[in-house]
Length: 89
Image (cartoon, rainbow, N blue to C red; front, top):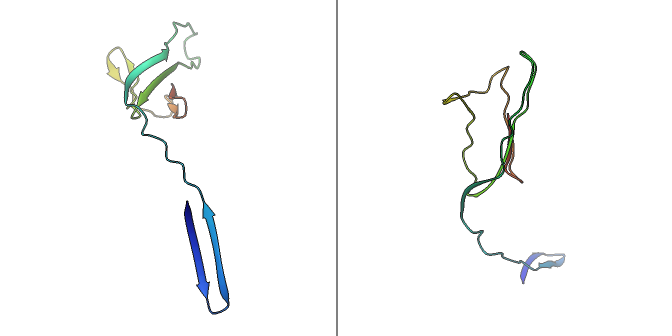
């Protein structure tokens, strides 16, 4: 049980709280839980690709096209939801 106590010439006040400590999460190598899906789009049309994985610690995510890593810019936007390790391009 944790307690914080404050005291001055006019009185005393204290607060108490319980602290539950969970064990460290189990380290896991990256594993895709939802694979990339093949898709077709018309030229110059936007496309969204999504991959979902589990890992601990959080992995570095890289998107590659023909073996070359893509760099986010005005036409390539990446985003990640670290709660579910969902990463989209």
